[in-house]
Image 1 (cartoon, rainbow, N blue to C red):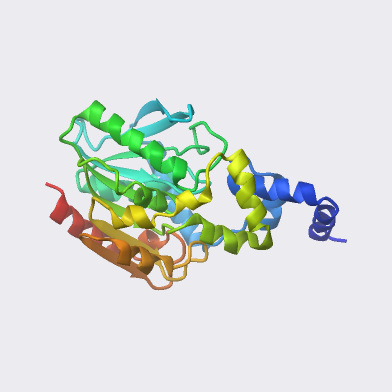
Image 2 (cartoon, rainbow, N blue to C red):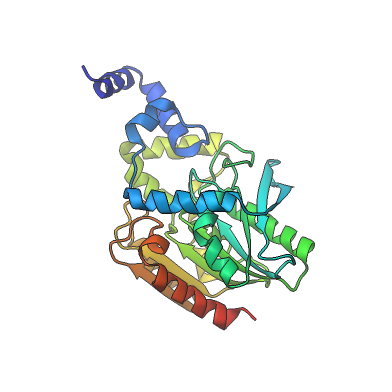
Length: 303
């Protein structure tokens, strides 16, 4: 019997353990070795990982300021500020990472672009990620509340005349959509790259018949309702122009969600849908098209 069959046999013998382990894999910061071995799979070609990790490594060597705040849940949150030059720019790209990621992995891919346009970069570690505290992912419920706190912090630290771009990826993309109806006027536009419209739709596909029990279990352990991850009403009432980015071959967040989000946007908006691009791959697969869209938004909405 090979190792995978042995693992499956062990799981079948203990349904309670199965449920606990899958909940941990789906919602908690620390995954078990068992579920990770069974379910965690690479979805990108090697070239993407080389690109992403190389950009992250370059960012590690850059000058940064580290800030700490507390979430409304009492967790210690850390954010990292990368100034563009000797003086603070007053223009800030606020980059929000995704699920089971951390700030440097995501910010690295946009860092050189934003610096070349004169923007400082601010990138927090979300709850249950990187150097921040917490153990449960909020599927945009916690993360959006935390990022609103970071916006208040940035305004108090750098003044009310700052101009901010909210730029989120995957869970971070859903996060910036979720908060888009509550951001202060320092936020000039929002970019959602591969963001989801509702975490329930993703988890139903991923968990199958286990979804209902995981949904209820998360109410008890996570302390929130996954129904609150739906961004539809937030987007309908958004206060900022929107750029919606999505790869058409996304195996993680279905591409079909992007046009639905776009249609909900009430104000200035645009989209970039990329052929043959997988999850959060557009900056890698189509950098010229991506930077052109961003340049257009910067020209239109940043003074």
